Amino acid sequence: MAVVGVGHELNGDDAAGIAVARSLAGLAAPHDRLLVIDAGPAPENTTGLLRRFGPDLVLLVDAAQMGEPPGAIHWLDWRETDGISASTHTLPLHLLARYLVAELGCDVALLGIQPAANTLDAPLSPAVSQAVASIVADLGAALVPA
Image (tube, rainbow, N blue to C red):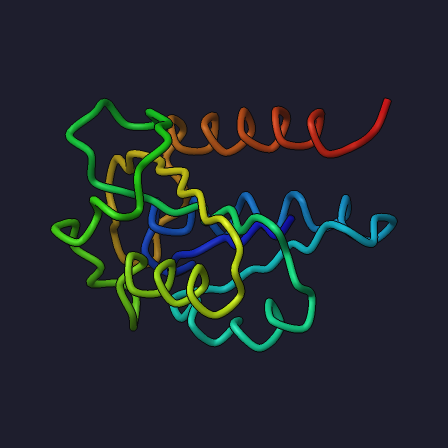
């Protein structure tokens, strides 16, 4: 499995995905079947690394405008995100996901976090920070054998 955090660290809550990846990075080191990537605003630049790793599942984590309260977390169908703005990314996630499925033969899941604000040079909002901590705790518990 590969966890790919997507976002722009200088745009407030848009950094939610990379905050998840950075928090999970320590878990990947002792496990040869887990790869955690901070992809920043250009997740397509990670395709070579993903190809070499050969995951069966790629989990994309990103801030997503879902019309929910800030910090809401939802599984999204990447096939239905072509109408969602990807202005902070160089390539829309549905195109990346389609490429990964076709070229790597893996499954792709997308976990969205509703931002409060994508303000330039702002930290994560409290609601999004709490959502990041919740995701990290849940994924960490699921990924680390007891």
